[in-house]
Image (tube, rainbow, N blue to C red; front, side, top):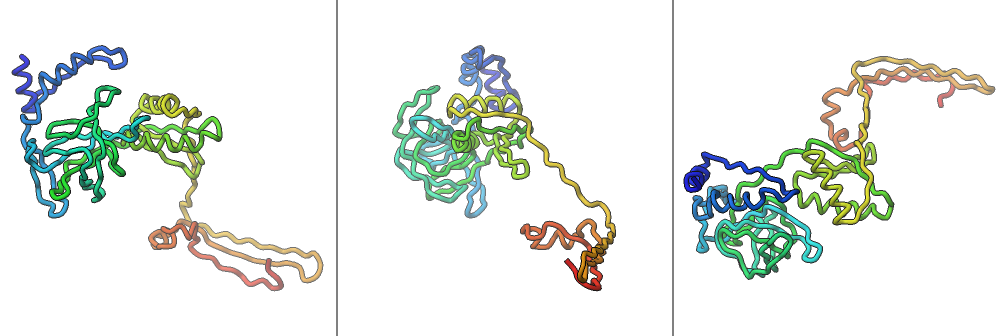
Length: 308
């Protein structure tokens, strides 16, 4: 049965489904055994396909040490002792600690100072990685989830990951003023680790809104803020800023007459206001924020004496 299931999985005709609970530590061992039994090894898969960023031509990398180095960054994590960790899956070639690689997203060189083989929360230092290895690297400046890391002289861009848009938002604020800066740094680190987690500041409501893939997702984020970053925060539903818009054009006339001695005051103003036309909305001043509103026409009647 295992041989037949493995063949079907390798041909992508069958998807094994396992039951269990990581929280209760049930089914975890069976799931890891199924990975060894059913999932293909790197040599069972054909060469990975990518694109040359310079020529836009298709490029293939076989799972061999003799091929140029190519890897995909699939996770960013923060370790309290080591710092930022980048988990990579090596598709081809070999990379030694202390070497330079190319990040095809930024076009910059990155130096990988150290490498670790991860075992749960333990890190075993390694001198290098080869095709088929999964490791965590340290020392980089700007690597994000989904970046392709490759040989300096043989650039390639692998198929990037597509992340869904968040479906729920939550407004949070620190309980004390001293936690304000700590909250911002903590949220930025969490957003770097998890591409499906977003942070934004709503200028209309003056709220910090975090967004994720569900209530449980955001509950875990808030719990990590408390446990890992020691930040206590209040949470609640985001406020909605209601706005009104003009739907039709109207005319209005206002007259001022005030006799308080001397020449007195008199003014007569008539104006027309309505929705802005498309020409105004397409103007550079409106797009740059210089014009906030517009009336379709304004006419003033000159006063007979004095205007204020």
